[in-house]
Each structure stands twice: as C-alpha cells, then as structure tokens.
Image (tube, rainbow, N blue to C red; front, side, top):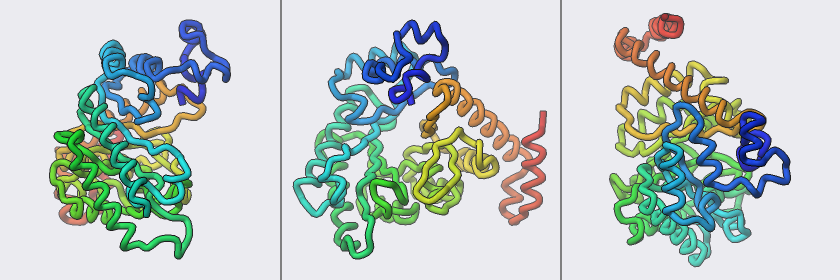
Length: 335
C-alpha cells in the first residue's frame, strides 16, 4: 500500500510534506528504506518481513540493517516473491519441466538465504511459490510435477548458502497466477515437509486467508502443523473467502470467532515466533491499520488466556460446544 498509494504513505499533511509525497507521480520515490522508516511509526510493530527480490534490489545489507535499527524494528523473514516472467508463469518455479528454470528458482532461494544471513532475519526465508500450479485439466502430470517440486525444494534447502537458515513454505490453494496449486492444503503441505525430509530446516508458514480459501479451519491447521513440529510462521488477517480472492482485511474484522480460536491454539501449541499481519490496506492508512491489528491480536491473546484459565480445555475434551460458547461470551465481555 505504501508504494502504490503515496497519499496513504504519510498519515498527515506535515508528514506528507516531510517526505514530499502525495501525488501518484511520487510512487517511484518511495524506497524500501522509506517504508521501513514509516513502519517504525506504527505502535506495537516490532518486526517486518521483506520481499525478495522486489524490496531489496539495488540495496546493501548494511543500509537495510541501519534503517531497521533506526526504526526500532527487527528483521523477520525474507519473503521470496518470484518475478512474473513468462518462464515461471508457464511452468512454475520448483515444478517447472525445464531443469534450467528449476535451477534458477533454487538460485533465487540461495540469494534470499544470503540476505537472511546478512541482516540476521530471525524467521529465515519464506517461500510463496505462486506459479507452482496449473489452470486447466490435462495441463500437468501431477505425479511428476510433485516429484520435481520435492527435489527442487530439497536442493534449495541443501544449498551451501542456505546452511543454517530455516526455510518455510507458504501454500495458497488458488491464485490468479495459478488457479490450482500443486500444494493446495495443509495435508498436502505436511506431505511435502515429510518428503523434503529436512526436520528443523524446512517447515511451513501458514496464512489464515489461504487456509480459509482452502476451506480449512485455521486453528485446526495450526494445531496439526505444530504437532508435526513444522510450524515456522503464521500470517494473520481476514477475508470474505470468495473463490480465488484474498481480501487481506484487518485481523478479526470478518471472522471474529475463527480468529479467536486461532489465537487460542497458537497459545495452546506454545507457538514461538513472529505473528505477521498479511493484510492489504488499499484505501486505509497502513500504519493505522497495522496498529489496529496489533491491538486486536493482543486483546484476543488476553481473552484466549482467560479462556484457558476458565477451563476451555475441558470443554474441548467433552465436545461441549455450548459450554465453550458460554466461556467465550464471558471472555469477550469481561472487564
């Protein structure tokens, strides 16, 4: 939002004057370092994921680290976004039939690992393979495509430049880049983790919007992945869940009960890591929206704690839906 909407980049007229922004012609003037500085003004935001290569092209690691420190923000993950080239668009990245394209994808991950090491990104590298899928029936050989993906991802994790870097896979069931994903569900993603077979090095980053689009319950998905010791990260937000759409709305704004249960299970599985707000404030002040997300998550975290102490675990063990709802009723409206 900050780069696409310079009018939203600065929250006030004085801030707008400070950066000299406000017109559509100013889009290219907003740099990654500017966006880091602006994000640093958001109360409660302590970490940021940085897209690679888009946000880091032409930059030096020292400049990025300096900007992060000045803003009081720590680096979370390097989030790989494959360029929308015809090579990736036609055949995918890790699943591409052309070995040379798969090698390019592995190299991109290796470069991302270098960035993760250079700026000490605590979350390592997150891969969203938006082109690894298909649009038509009779377009791909599912078995061969799966096997190519497993082998290429293992090559990426085993790359010398990725030694010591945690790499996680963020699946999305459907996208305009590929209507059907090769990895369309949590179950498939866990199968992928098992076959890549690099415990502690290769896991999953789950995204609440993606899980809802897949017809899943994010809390159950989080519990399943945590049970497999593969929950490396979690992106939260909210969606209206229309097919192929990921609205990226403010956390808990549509699915309050679902969001609370997700937070409850993040507590229950003792999740330790960054909670990343994967939202798209297209017409709202992005810092104001980020602060709202922080407040909502913290409030739900506290409510989930009250539910734990009030005996929610026993209600779940007994499959007592009304008992759970009554505890939630008290938790939401407790002073």
